Image (cartoon, rainbow, N blue to C red; front, side):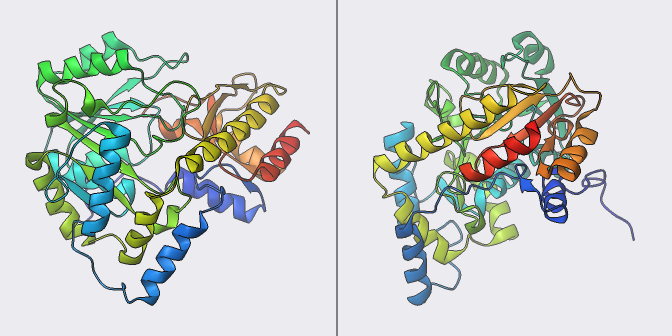
Length: 376
């Protein structure tokens, strides 16, 4: 049966493949980014109450009005952004759907989209499904962007740049000077900036800056966020996109015809998430910071060279001192050491064979056992 060229060449997600291998080998899964930090009881109770109260049908396609209002308030107070909840905020089935709907809505055939590699795995398929052309620039070993390379690769065919901060998989937090450089480029070349800010609350060093707050950027930026990582509800599939009305209109069209709406009872639960006090975030960051240090210090005792992340809950490690490339190394770990990690090349268009990614969002007991197995 004929198939579409738009999705040909994309195999099973490597991350999901490693999760499957973890189950097959009874391994500790440090590959997939689902958090084991406890979900707040009040969030769960709010979702349960919604189910018991009959909120089991479609919501308004763009999301419950009460949730859009809460997101609008959060964007104002935390991010420094003002969006009209009626026309400029759309609740989606997770941040991944928000990214997909944004790219499908805004990118046309042969439009070029600049992507920073290593990259979150759904950016490239999203661009390809939109019949666009992904263009890559690499974040260097010192977690610095190559400005000259970016300037060379941006031109009249560039429609958008996808930016992830804090960054998965490196943990890089883009600073203000870097964001200003990208701002100037977007304005000069008339480029849309798509920002994936799903880890905005998980920062250990530096500060989170939403690029849309920079002068001249709000009208050309789509700000994407979600609830999965920060509130440990990855299975609820609730995220959002915020953008000026002209950009949001095509995004809403794609969202409407692909998912109709995010799960209604879980939208109710995430309203409560946005009402949690500040100490929730302080405790969560403290927990992940200590988890980061467990993995970082343990990996330093091996021949791996770990990169200490400033945000998110992932860590890249250089395996160049071993006589194995990333895929063979990851297979060795999951089969012989019962620890699952992700081969670094899955985050690159070309390269990354000297890297693997560890996720440290699991319980500390599991992290310590995983590190013990690796050291042995």
